[in-house]
Image 1 (spheres, helix red, strand yellow):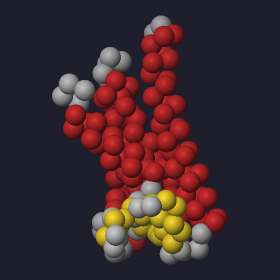
Image 2 (cartoon, rainbow, N blue to C red; image 1 turned 45 degrees about the vertical axis):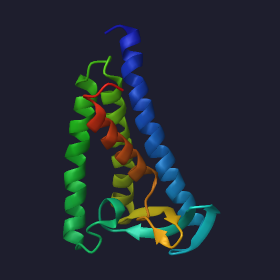
Image 3 (cartoon, rainbow, N blue to C red; image 1 turned 180 degrees about the vertical axis):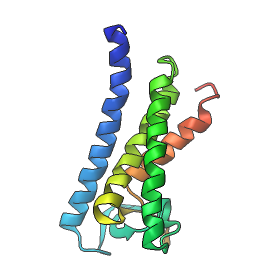
Length: 158
């Protein structure tokens, strides 16, 4: 494999590590600087609101039992492995595919880290308009959502 090809594949691994590292670091900062359920205004329309998410994205299934929480971990790990395989096998010219897989993996790893270490995922970004608040989320959730959008666009001209 030529070194240029290795670089082209390795840059996506760098993106994965960067996303998961920023996500984990941001959540650790929140845990060290805010009290659980503390609200801290940041800019108009965005607060930091420290909460624990025991469910999946956007607090769906947040009332599931501990057994099902560990089932989420056991389901997430093979999905991450499959995404790594797809990333590795994707033609280097399909950048949107590689970006999508990298964003999905980076976000999934960030939330998986929380779930394994704490038993829950730390959420803290509170987007609101007037009195309406979107579900609290984190950087990993954002990465997974953007990666999913890229996967939906993969067959379109971008």
